[in-house]
Image 1 (cartoon, rainbow, N blue to C red):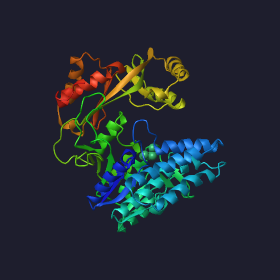
Image 2: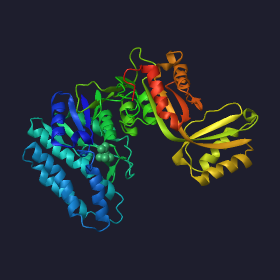
Image 3: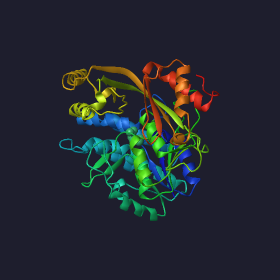
Image 4: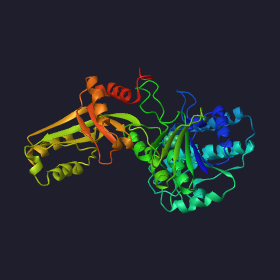
Amino acid sequence: MKVIKFGGSSLASATQLEKVLNIVKSDSQRRFVVVSAPGKRSPEDTKVTDALIRYYRHYTEGDDVKADQEWIINRYQAMVDELGFKSAVMAKITEAITSLATLPIENNSFLYDTFLAAGEDNNAKLIAEYFRHNGIDARYVHPREAGIIVSSEPGNARILPSSYDKLEELRDSEEVLVIPGFFGVTVDNQICTFSRGGSDISGSIVAAGVKADLYENFTDVDGIFAAHPGVVHRPHSIPELTYKEMRELAYAGFSVLHDEALLPAYRGKVPLVIKNTNNPDHPGTKVILEHSGATVPVVGIAGDDKFVSINMTKYLMNREVGFGRKVLQILEDLNIRWEHIPSGIDDLSIIVRERELTPIKEQEIISYLTRELGVDDVEIEHGLSILMIVGENMKNHIGVTATAARALSDNHINLEMISQGSSEVSVMFVIKTEQEKAAIKAIYHAFFGEENASN
Ligand code: ASP
């Protein structure tokens, strides 16, 4: 049994919906369909979720909302017209969109979420009707009925573990269930959304809940590429990677799937596949718990910028009890999250994301380290990027770091720092941001060859 999730670009127009219908029809195991709100039809278009945000602003600011309501309703109506069927659900959608502007504004912390969730909710109603019209025994299921119960954190909901038992009951359904993604309901029955892009999370929750054999996440690319296609020309798509590898790549900027979407499926031991609605015969990228046989040492190379390194040196640092704790204490006091701590005998670097710092915080760190901890030297270095060379199987191969480092030195790229966790899922290089693209290309060539890699 499979749970299948379609993103906004797969549901943006009648042409896309026809592809979705064929995908669902072509495999009777596809029994749970989780949908996003309609996305953009062209680069200039507006996503329905963004149109709902505009509508919410106008409503709460007391402006006229007629144009907003019409735009959103027409967006659904246009799909029905293009698909050429008579929709009974359209009246309900019209009512649902207009009645948003009757909800209380004061003391209503879930109003924004209720507006946003309407994009997915109404799309699910429409898609279930479209499926029925085309011979699929389909039924729309509200997350409340499905049992997707979430914490009361508007715009940032978390699934409550108790949801999973209720979700499991859906297994017995004979129909194809169409469930709107992106939101759940709180124990007090309020609509509460996950963070933006959160329909991926809903799909993963449903997959874990119904104990699916596979969670298929349909998007508009042929899976996950081994390097960013904006950097490496036509990189190959990765056939298979593990959840751990996926997490490492996502950390360093691979954003095919929402960050939080991996966890429910991973915990539920459900494999995931990322596939392309526009090219459904392509096998896509499978995300599994463990590689079954021998695999390549490196599956992908990711790079991300906007990192800063706080570098400090102190003679005989290694002999001082509690030095590291005191350094981390100042970061905690300033509410700064750190990412990596490469160190030498007398030096320590703390790598943080640029957004964690302000000029005032930087001054506080420098004066604390100098005055309270007596460091000999402290410097805050901006403009850094990290490169993650990812592959669980690198632990069984000698020379992975050497190959990557040689690729950098051959291209005159200075390696500022190296860090590798004990699990050896990845090795991380820190370099200057201006050399990031050249570095990714060089390392890609070193592991995967030259053929597609000129830009
Ligand atoms: N429609 C929501 C958004 O645009 C959620 C999603 O598409 O996954 O963020």
